[in-house]
Length: 514
Image 1 (cartoon, rainbow, N blue to C red):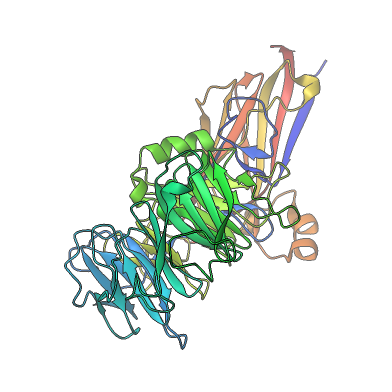
Image 2 (cartoon, rainbow, N blue to C red):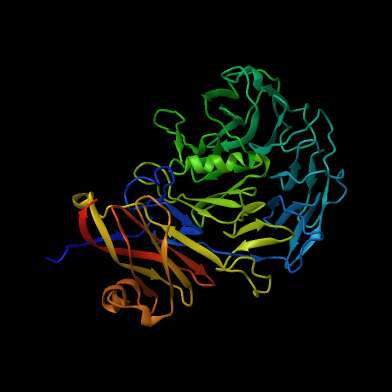
């Protein structure tokens, strides 16, 4: 009697994203146990990320690590991309860069926090005098403090003032005047309001008209910051404390990002969002990275918190967290949460020294000696469009027993088919393994063109349904070996063309009880 064949169809592979928390269990095959150098395209398919193209033709002198990058926008809307590296500050000028360090006290580090304020660009950094650039065509100078003092590693431009953290004090300058920090200005002693006695303030943010102070393990939220008292007391008719959240805070200054009506930040428990529920005026915290938390925290712990960067790119719909020491970037698709409330996650096998999302929608990275744009499908393309390096898009399914009815039966693997969208000339390694051992068998294939389209063909996936053309390609392989559970995957070379995953079919014969 012939053995029964069973098929497993995975539509939209990894449609729930990466799940490393449960990667060694038999979980829903809509997850992925590896999704590397991937994003989600406009139709929700797992797709290859873009690469990078250098903005400047030649490297900045000495090829320093570009640690900070910022878009300065003045009162009339003129823009300049400025960046810090090698203890200097530069401006992007077409395909060149200009040194705009100016007359500032010689820096000893590049961890500036830049903000646009009253038509100017200001910068603060621990152990350094604050600096200012007054026009997009000018250069930086030290801020001449007329009253008080201003020293901080964090600055926020909001509510018509600059807000800084100076030791345990939250300070604000006079209205529209970065030179006065006592006259028309003031401060609050945060030590008097931390819920459990003391915390270390890390970051500041504006949130729906509130002022948010992130400590390492707590969050303070102030109402009505447009009218601070200027005396250091808490007058409830003006700026007042409205929320004090304990047990959760931000551990890395440059991970705080606005995402629509929310704020995303890195905590010691993963990526979190601070959302305001207007109906009951509460501030719940939701866990963005719940499906990758252990791996993420392990990578964070191996990095320098001062070097970790985050960015939200509205036009791309993603939040990136880049970890230079681990040479890894975590990608979170923020367009729509899963039913569990988390967001689809992948990882990229590269990192960046700094990132900024421009108002134009472009994303700029700070590399070593170069500013680069998120563009194309090769890494490190030269400014003129030549060169570039290939990278690998990788996907692993979950472990699967095909279906519940045959969970205890041995599966004799027979065939693998995958439908991909786009690409031409890419090398593909198809992989499979059994019984929770990531010892893969593999075969190599090449995406060629129209001749790859087999049984799916034009009728099902062509002109009528998807817009047609030779854009869908079938990859297939004969599988070997057997086991109770199987995992499949592949590595796709990205060499200038985008690839998206449409569908996977695994075919196996049933054997004896395993």
